[in-house]
Length: 312
Image (tube, rainbow, N blue to C red):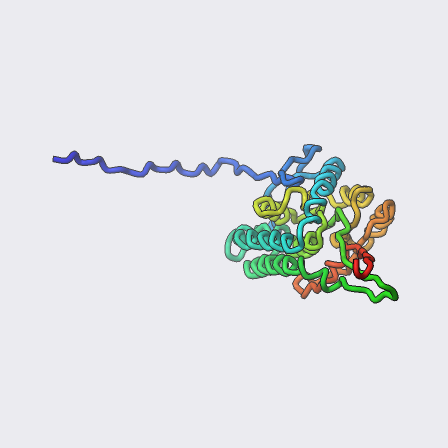
């Protein structure tokens, strides 16, 4: 007779220890495609709207800004040299990855409690509002991915000349762009200022929202697992007031987006940016859910005019 097999039982899991401390995640910087700690060794706590500790976030220093600029400059030749169609494909892949991690950004604790979702860290929103912001961020990324290979045809063209020549004007990327991300729109605002920088062939050094940095770091994880080459986006967390002057004064940064800086603090950064004649984009307070148009696509491009003899 066949041997009767003993009945298998599932081992009991030990009961959760209510006295055990929860291990909090320490979010790191994103530089050159890697996630290093700040060279300063500093970090700071991030709290929910209810005042609960969510995580610790690396507090970047001046040295981290320099490292991020070096990584962005190294990546610029490859990214700007890629075809516009290829850049659009890569950006669309980022949108796919972001869409696949929607739940991570909109998850909330409790049904009617203050949100501790990553997209709402530091602000009180409903689940529907958090979901709407994530959906809008995905759509905004797709929007700019689609413009990657179309923008040049809209703003470029053939110029009329009196002579046997062709004269073409075409937009070219400015270079390394320092982006001060919006403080009040942790994901949609970040996507809205970053995507047009990349779509036109620039690389970026981003200083994330100081009080609500978790969506930015989670978005950096999305970028790291997509097809975006290392160094195209470098993301720093920490004090905007501390880091922004070093970014504005850095002579290897070609342009600066002041979307995340209040009007009263912009003048000092504009003066620092004048040291190497940076392009400075200082928009008014936007409605991040509104149709973005194409104005941001033109903020960080230079127009190059080429003459060519006819018949040669």
